[in-house]
Length: 258
Length: 269
Image (cartoon, rainbow over all chains, first blue to last red; front, side, top):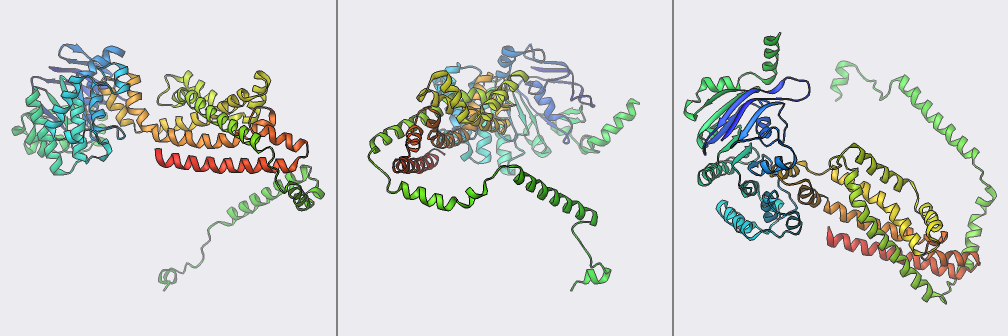
């Protein structure tokens, strides 16, 4: 269970990007977060695995409070949080297998990592997952030789190799063509079911959010203003989420404050 | 034709306003004055300059034909020169790796280490190889060791700086992705940073070896080993035919170095 309470993130002295945000994700549900650019979707996701430092509030994952962790403890907690990125973030000059195994870096010894002597069970697991998503025959290819959809599959397998308790996906399909994009969304949904894994997806494509996820969270300028099943996302809710601009919201907030 | 100009009657255009033009003329005049002053202030003995072609012809005449009697010795010392360059490049590369890590803004542990890294780079780069050689000849005495250290110390700054810049220019997204997996700092470096700077690393190491090959040929002039010792001996004793042989040998070596480094670049990169 992921439980976010009263989360605030402020960059510098400006207005907070996340404003006293609460969100709970239970079970193996696939949750999408929608909202216009600048609403704070990415920041929210990155606060969970601490790629971004939250200003205040708490984030609890299966009983571990994440916001206070440092060093070794933080790394141990990060192992349990998989992340998939918009631009895949693979290491281009390494092979697909090395990229996939880099999801295990938090578990294996430094020597094994440097020498590429991966444990047998990790290699077996890697082939299983790569076969599941259809990239096993690319194991020895360099990551930059793959197409976008294949690269994102490598990204997904890398995250799953971590044996995560939750999967975060930051606009995983925004760099892909519509058809590949649907394949990746379908894959994320199916894997979530097969691995009993909660998945949190930032997404711009509302149609895909409705088609592939169990629950939609709508954000607008640092707040959650919609949180319900896809069926209940009507035109009115869409307007509330997407109308206006971050700038207008900001000036509105200023007026409220003064 | 010219309908717009005709219609609006705008026929005059100049790139600069009169004031800008005056400023540019003033700048040119200032540069010319500075150049004239510089030429006047250095002590050139013009007779010797006009005399140069004749002297050159004379020297070439005395050099020809090159004297190959000591060719065996020359080739042996030439090999020593290659060894100096190669060992120095190897050691220089090894030492420059941690220095590059310290001197790159995105990998250095803190401000103090950043400045330490930069200090090492600047020190190494601001001192010429020959000056390093003089220093090490004073410490270790004349010979190959001083030569290797001199070239190594100069190489550290060169390789470290270029490699440090390569580290600063890497794609940060894979680094972020691996940090998110819970990998330690060292593992992130091995998996996300090193693969990205590998091509630059090889290119820089090969280029530096090529440069070091040339530099090691003059080390002998200050007693730090290599072919320069024989060259200086020949010049000091006015043995111009032998000096010519040495110069030709150096030329052959440099061309060979060029060929080898071009080959390596093709194979590795």
